[in-house]
Amino acid sequence: MSKLVLRIDKECGSMCPWGLFKSKEQLKKCLQEQDAYSSGWTEEEYYKQNAHVDLDEYCEIYQYGYIEFTEEQIEEALGDYAEKHKLKDNWGDEL
Image (cartoon, rainbow, N blue to C red; front, side, top):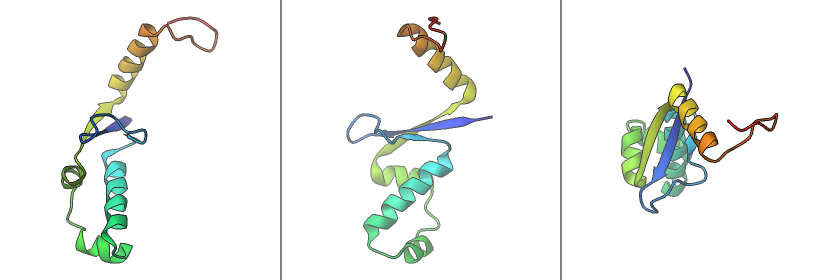
C-alpha cells in the first residue's frame, strides 16, 4: 500500500513547497542531508556522529511536523478536493 508524508514547517505555519515525501524514510534522509550540510563536517563524519538520530529528533531540531497518509486517505481527499473545486477529468466531465 502506498503512503505519502506531508512535512509541515511549524515555524512559518505553512506547508513548504517541497513538503511531500513518499515515505518517512525519505523525509528523514532529506533532513539528515540538510543537517549534514549545515554542520560543516564531511558527510562521512556527520553520519558517523549522528547515526543514532531518528526522524522525530530531526523534526524537533527543524520545528517540522509530519502527517502520514494512506492511499485510501489520499484518494478520498483528492476526490473531495476535485468535487469541491469542480475539477474536470480528461473528458471534460466534472466529478
